[in-house]
Image (cartoon, rainbow, N blue to C red; front, side, top):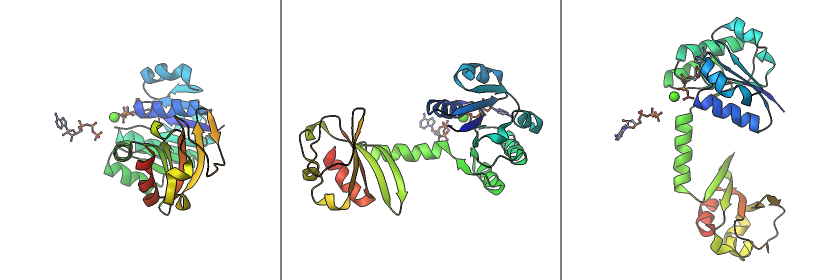
Amino acid sequence: MAQFAVIGLGRFGSAASLELMRLGHQVIGIDSNSKFINRLADQLSHAVIADATDELALQELDIAGCDAVLVAIGENLEASILCVLNLKNIGVNQIWVKATSKAHHMILSRLGVSRIIHPEEEMGVKVAQALNYPMVSQYMALGNNQYLVEIDVSPRLEGHRIDELLADGAAFVKVVLVKRRDKLLSPVATDFVLERHDSLILAGSLEILKSLAPKLS
Ligand code: ATP
Ligand code: ATP
Ligand code: CA
């Protein structure tokens, strides 16, 4: 279990803090507007009304001990930057910040924060990829053009063997595991027979995964 602070509980900050709670972490939520604190108070470990541009207020909250702090103050550039400076002064190492403009990005990058997030652009790219491959429900880039993907197997492939479906591609792709309802089946033998609603987790180069995905779905 890690400890996080999320500053700014708008749509982005509240979604991030609730997901961190769901994942079993401690989350302190901070917002200068009591409306946002009241809304989340009983769903977070702590929820505090505080102005993040006020260094003393942040010091009193003892957030220097957090594993990471997510700054999700969006529209107010000045508040976001002052907040980051305060976090640096307090000694927070892992500072992740939501950026809303090119200028904002440039300043954050000069300040040396750990990660700059552009939700609209990043989500736009994800949505385009989902439109391109609707059968790929999850994917992760592993570097060097290698990817890990989850493919929901088409019901019409029920009863087929995995090696028969992968055919020539089998030599170039790793079947990492099969997800069957709440079970993760691994290792996966070449004569493994698929059932309805199975998902395959495959690893391989983008080219080979691109050629296989349409055959499986
Ligand atoms: P989203 O798109 O995530 O809803 P946004 O990008 O529109 O948010 P804002 O609504 O401007 O961003 O800010 C997000 C939250 O940050 C708001 O709830 C706001 O009250 C809070 N906030 C703004 N300034 C401060 C500050 N100085 N200290 C603490 N919280 C702040
Ligand atoms: P983002 O956060 O993705 O930058 P946004 O959520 O702030 O966008 P807007 O900037 O209001 O949304 O709108 C996004 C785009 O949609 C703009 O480029 C705008 O010109 C365009 N748009 C708005 N209304 C219409 C319309 N009726 N028909 C076509 N395009 C429109
Ligand atoms: Ca917004």
